[in-house]
Image (cartoon, rainbow, N blue to C red; front, side):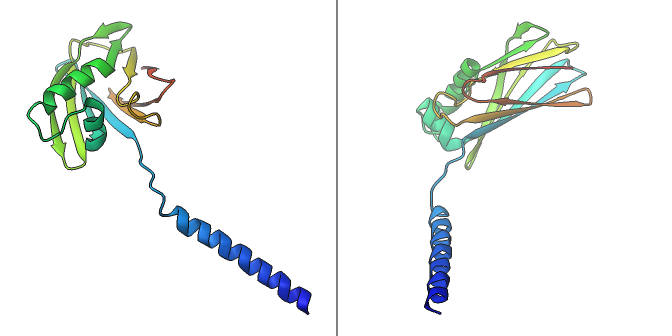
Length: 164
């Protein structure tokens, strides 16, 4: 009788320990570091248009400037130019920054590259925020003539290539 009571108490303590662990873990702060880029091919103008979404605090920390200051957009432009390279069919392409927009916790960055009649291979080097945040993950979704491809970038995998 006493043995059964001790076994039940032991199970109860074990279960309450697990429950306490999960309750405490729910209070652990875990920041998620990611960016998302959408790439659209515009057939009429033979242009690749890029839209990148980043966390405002993360990009602000990386470029060391407050997003509400006048020089923020210029620093974002310089940062993107230094951390995002595009190669179409093996040839490097110049990206043209077309603007950015701060919307609360999100910064939207717009850029493009033109003069692209066809794409057989698209190679991208994306190091956005990788040096500032070791666990950063950058996703790039590409839409080209009805085909969808996704690239994933992180430390150690800064370059990716897809074929169409």
